[in-house]
Image 1 (cartoon, rainbow over the protein chains, first blue to last red):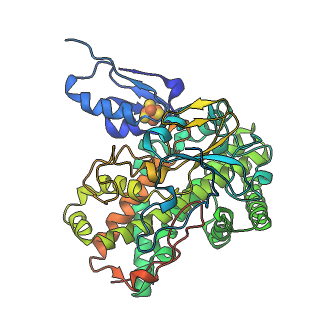
Image 2 (cartoon, rainbow over the protein chains, first blue to last red):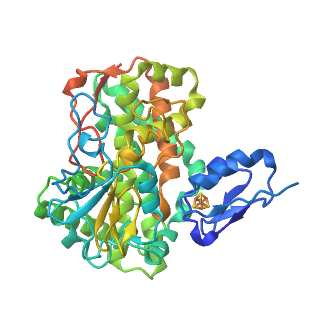
Image 3 (cartoon, rainbow over the protein chains, first blue to last red):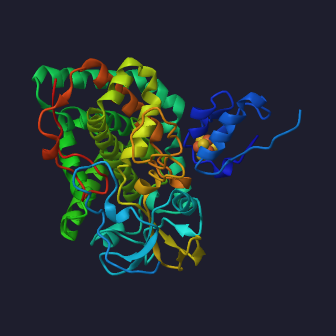
Length: 65
Length: 392
Ligand code: SF4
């Protein structure tokens, strides 16, 4: 999982979709990644978060385990 | 695909169904001409709308000489300092970032008990005044208005004034002078509030003033955006959603039986009703080929129709039907791209609390007049009901 803070517009869609993976910084409202290798079981949620992100700030890469 | 005809915006709705987008918009994307004769593309499909709203070749800067305005007098009124809604990055991002922390999910969640109290008190007052009541003025407007006034540091006691002026400002049928007068009065009002807030760190306006790097005009323009967006949108969503639920009683009952459905129901109502119904304007900075025969020339305006995009059958099967249990999260009711609504966490919290509380506390809620007699604000940039007489 990677997030690009430059593209984040603080909509919070990611936090609503996958609260264990994303948070928002109290200082500037930008997305914060809580874990960069979340469990594969979260994949559907993460895909939704990436699709909902209005800034296109969220990228997923699937890693063989 | 290059037929050019006059575009009525926002267009009239089909008789009988106030929830469906105007028939004139239910068509493939096309090039049309605006009220002043300028060419403009009406973009109606989900993928095209979403693509444009994330494409930096389309500008939101209202100072652009060919930016599409929906009514006379608006270009003149924009001036040198539009609110961040009508600017591109980096100016947009700079202003927006000053306010993002006020609308964080956690901040808004912390406000939920206070919102619930406002909702309960407002409903208590409506019930005390007795059935029937006008839900628009007794409930739908007071709730978000109280919340946003508190957040901004604007006295709620002045609500009759700024709601009236706000209504004139959003009404495309008003002549240019009325529009200019409303903007002057509201800007003057907010400038006075901002001046009084100097050194008093209470609310977003005071915070913007305290930064010291914004001009009085910038504080007023951005305060005005939040003030209007903060209650016109949520208020109209609340009353229109209530009507939609009254017209779909099985779904209202489902929601009463299982209150945990409220979050999904609010997303579906946002999708189905899409109150930002006049389209989101952008201007092309260069020639852009959007596919399907739509080639937007440099300098041409586009209107992204969120309402038809949100009914896109490819994405939302049976998109013309209200189904509170579908997954509607991909809707574009808050726009998309870097301009997506800053206040959406607050809007969601208010709608979830206001609608759930209303259903729970007034199980016998029903229309107090025939449905056919209701009248709608089709000419406003934000769609809604003028009044919603209800009884219980
Ligand atoms: S969804 Fe995207 S834009 Fe919104 S807070 Fe998350 S990363 Fe930022």
